[in-house]
Image 1 (cartoon, rainbow, N blue to C red):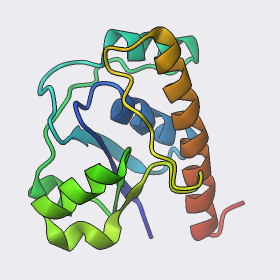
Image 2 (cartoon, rainbow, N blue to C red; image 1 turned 90 degrees about the vertical axis):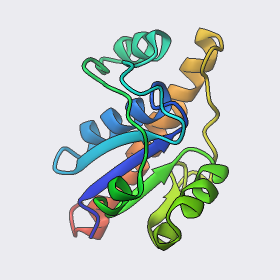
Image 3 (tube, one colour; image 1 turned 45 degrees about the vertical axis):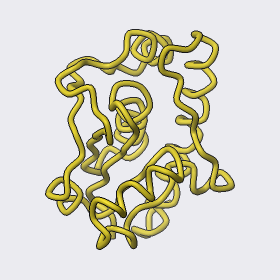
Length: 149
C-alpha cells in the first residue's frame, strides 16, 4: 500500500510542488512531499507556477524547494517523477529504489510532463492541465488499491 508519496522533478519549484499539492487535494489521506534532482534549495514555488495554480484555486504558498537524497527516497513508499530520465537519475543515486519509482504520467500513457521553467504562461497552463489529469488518475488508482470507490 502506498501511503507516503514523493514527487520529483528538477528544480522542485514548478512541476513537483504543483503535483504534490494536487495529489493532496485529490487524496487527502496521503502523505505527499516533493523534492528536486537539482533543487533550487530554499526557494519558493516559481511565481508563474504559483500564479497558474492560484488561478485553479490551488495554493503553492509556503513551498520550500529541497534536494533529493537517498535518505529521503527511503522514507517514501512511492516516488513519482516527471520524466523518464529522472527515473534513471534516481536509480543511479539509489539503485534499490528502482521498484518504487514511476512516472507521474504513468496512467496517462506513460506521458512525460515537460518542464515549463522560464517558459510562457501558456506552457505553465498546459503543464498544469497534465499534472491535474495525472494527479486525478493517481488518486483514483490509489483509492482502488485501498478498496475505495
